[in-house]
Length: 392
Ligand SMILES: [Zn+2]
View (tube, rainbow, N blue to C red):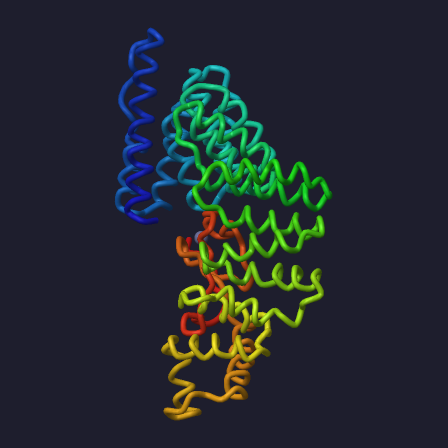
């Protein structure tokens, strides 16, 4: 256990003890004597980062005074943090079921039990408790935030939107990016069900939030392609890599589909080179996406790749080793693209800039930390090895 965690539990335990004492006074009863020596010993062990001995001391305190609420809360929190979720559930369940508990403690116990269920992955049980707590009281806001997480995990986007609206009504600012992504998820589901008008309505709502929202343009392009309007899809796609170069690999498959619909598949490299324009960032993102997709045939695109190689220090070194000071010829450019593609298939291609989660595929929401829009493609110099788990 880290010092911060111990301090957190300790302050919670002290607040809990003080609140119990206050509640007893408020309820008209005389305050009972102070915390037991075992309880204080438990706190002491927590401060000294000895969670096992703290648990023993708290258990002794509970055995002597089974009614002491603060010890039960301290014990439950400690069990959960140690990963002993079953024991935490039993402690908090007992508190919830006690008939003599003041309403404030019953709420606290219900919220603690919901946290246990969340940690155990029992989302339906957590949802039930949190839905009650979200109706009002001291735990309304944290309960609403937890419900957002549950509905995101269960991909219940409409419910997640409702929770955000509740939060906004309680004075919490709108999470415009998350809301726009939920709308996009709903739009994509409508599109798959061929409800194109429903999809367009959701996309309109998605675009009403953030100033720029390229995901909405990508799904609108999908709808245009489904409705056989490849020209509109191309117009929409052209904007995306300029606004968000990191999404070039999302643009590429849609571009292929649009050109195929127009019977112009062979024009792909020229269109890509045209998309790349003069901006080096867009050109690099396009070159990277083209390498990963294996579309490196046309002379126009070979020039984009040459520029990309020259600007990337890791690749420039390889090029110098192979071609000296000469500009690499077409065969060398293609061979290098193929080698880079093969190499990228066995290593992480995206990394979350928030938590460091690495993935072989692209996600709008980081599977590690649940942030939106944080997965960024890794260039050849940045692909640091095997897929890495998220930071805990
Ligand atoms: Zn993350």
